[in-house]
Length: 610
Image 1: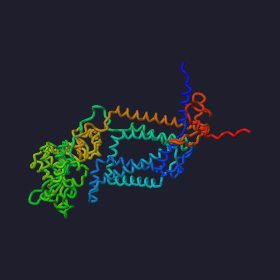
Image 2: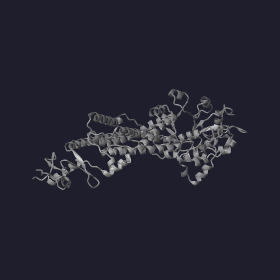
Image 3: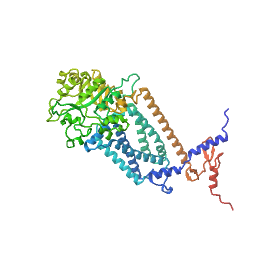
Image 4: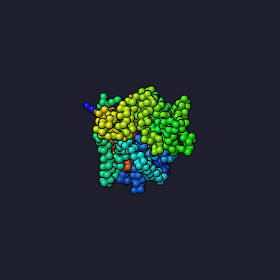
């Protein structure tokens, strides 16, 4: 036969119930929160809500809504620009071309966006904590200005980048294919944490309309988050054993993070880093006493990657193809890399590498092909047609083929021939060249043109199309892929090779990031949703029980010394509990509870009878 509950144990249960029914005023915490959020450091400046009260007036409600909007927009922009890191170098050089000077605009923009997001996030956390403490919201005017500035920056920056760099939205969509499972996890955790203040106010509100609105919005967001995984697709969620080999690496202008781009040193570094191929851009010099020399240069002028402004100050905007080879050989093509440090990596070079980089010159196509032949690397290059008035304006294809066939020892099968001009002529002159298309065309047209490789921007990534091309022996190369997450996505999509600025980084990846099996992912999101649902249900039940009990025992605040202030009721809780924790009656103290004694000492003495 079970022994009855001892008086001490029964008293402890009643004491626990009483503590749950009390509301605590964390004075130091509330003072700090109110001071940071509204600059209300004095106690008389703060106001606590009573049951049925709104958390703020209309102006403060609008300010809070603006704060939430600023949080969402700053997060969207920060996430958008953070995922665009793969193209920061292009963005900075784009601004260099327009402004005429180098500055790391991409990093500065990222830092500003992170600063605004951090500022707005702190304000949101302060507001949620104040609401959880039952305090009315009051946002200081300086914070209201800060929110407007953050909101304006996010909107303007997003609009400008969407106009100038609209393809980055495609990058954002691609990033969802690898980050969506983890964004879903973070979103569920955030909405679960919001259950406490939402339940707190839901059961204290009197109007059914407001209660229904709040609960409806919350449950709609929660349901949408719970069901997101059902429509989620990621190529990195694969069955075990179905992952193909890693894409081979092609150094984009060599290894431009380790050496000046399009120089022999850069291509040597790419080979050392594990690149299987080398990519570059070719144009032809203007001849003087000898034939035009094909050389490596990405830009149409020499201003960015040489010291032409010092050697030929009056010709800084002259097309690179209009210089003779003798003039080009006299230029320095490496010092700019050390002074501008476009990738922030020049400082990691040793003394010998820095000296070698500072002495680099313009590289000829012949020297580039000889390096590839010596190291048995494939090559791919864009070929620029010389401007009008150039002696090789109409014979630039033939001149380049002469270098490939007669002036270097590279095998034609090592060359991925990308130029689409006069392709039929090129195939007739050298049928062993690997014909490569920079445009996605129908399979029939690609096969009829003898295309064996597609060279596409990474935004065209598609597992389905990659598989279709592979079925007819057409490989896919994507450019420019430098971030590990983007390389992982290309790997999971079955891409055969990628052109990259960071071969030294991607070569170290042994498996794709974010790779998981469907069973592992199902287990992750189902457990997350179930745990969240249980926690939210428990929080709402607790607040329902608590508010129901407090309604039957109206309470007021009785300040006491110490960190916490206890809320004593008109019935002087803790009280005598009749029955097994079912009802309360005043006048009986619990064992070991001193609050009743204090309450009795504070209560007025009854008048004496005469």
